[in-house]
Image 1 (cartoon, helix red, strand yellow):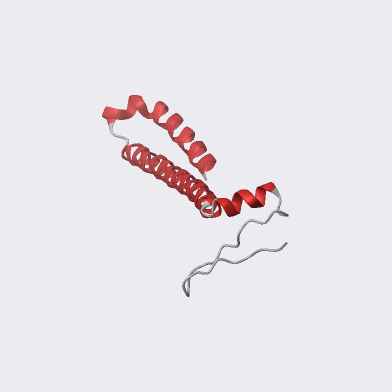
Image 2: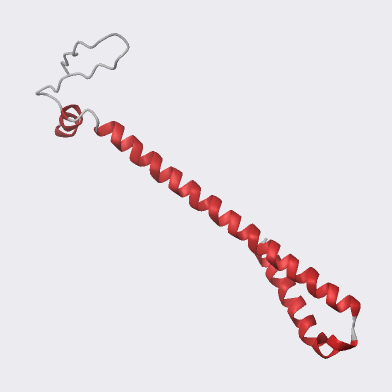
Length: 108
């Protein structure tokens, strides 16, 4: 490939001129010098978006675990007191406690 380089000021990138012997894809790249830059930016944006989604999912999972643990501690507090006023709810609280333990294990 016989490419002539454009004269550019010192420190800038020189882009070779498109040659008659280049493939059509390479000609397109050299005709539109910002094509590669835009392509790189698009790929970086996709990567950033994927990382952002992954981080958000991790945060939501952590919040869900914390909510399960807080509710479980609240139920354990009620069960440890055993007030006569909540004695009729003991069975439902024990069922909920077992369910929360199962959910907390799955969330990990």
